[in-house]
Image 1: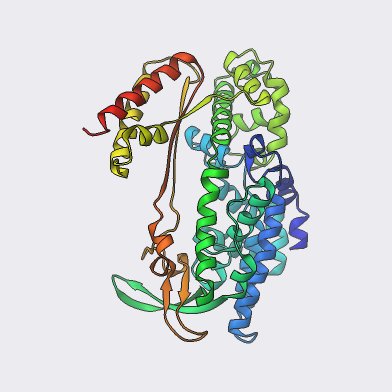
Image 2 (image 1 turned 180 degrees about the vertical axis):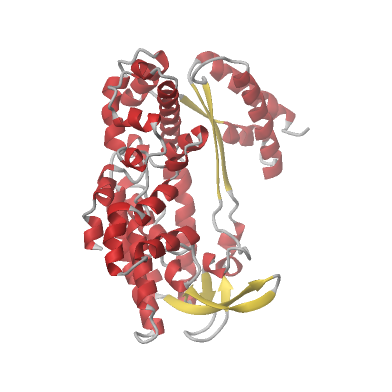
Length: 440
């Protein structure tokens, strides 16, 4: 694993920030995916010690344990610049390699990382990639991917520390001290097929588990879904979309970038793995000095906005409608009102010919806790033991905690506007739908 850390692909993560553009809101949020990946590996080793203590050295499948630990280290190796914002643009442009999971998969199965991993045995790198790709299927892979995995246990604490927010606090040591391994049944259509081992928490950790779920849930509206961060991501997306579009049409000179710039090289051949990994946050931030002098007015304006942090104005449509409709309005009524506002905004955008929309829509949802799904299996749940270790029943946290059961999905619907006319249009639309009550 030390040799994996020394590869160029892994060292690249030093130049990719964990929280993308969040430092525009939280100046301390400059930590990298490199630091996070090392933290996940460290946490995974602690979780694997619990597995080993439960199974015993003689029963521990060492190769599977090594696959999971390696997967914990390299799970984020494919993240692009500004991470999720870059992926959103990739989906819009239908660029397969803008998906960090696909890039990670190829980087692990091919190239320098693969060569290092395969020194541990033929096909070792492919087995590691499979752990990440297929998700939790055993107690070993649950270390890497589940509702209670090394990834979340690291980024929750790390992101909270670096942003300085007081939300999202968890009692990590108490959770670890009360973490056990238990066997739970699984099946299809209520028919038991067998049993699988997974992480479970002892009865003393119910409140710590509640805090864990609530803490993760609170980090979304306060950090990950912060309006300024999302607004900056939207502008970055429009900028990247325009640059790639110009490059595809042969108008790369209007971007202001030199012909061999990594961003243009990627735009010309987005299926090249080498060109995608040549991109990182520093490359894109460094490009702004060129982009602000572009001949293309759209590129110039967006680049200057990002450089100088002159973001579009945010209007929280859902929050405004919730207030206008009053306390008696339920989620369904608010959803209907949001849909009506959305339809009118989309219609307005379709009638305009602006290269960059003056109104940018932002929608998102976050479940506080994923309820049991047969297709996903029991490894996606947080299970609480009702009795002493080795006895009692295993019950889903949502059935033990009224707090977790009561939390509703967090829904976000905002728009970002660039001028007075657009602001007035959105404000009047919200007012009208608020009066109508969102009911057809």
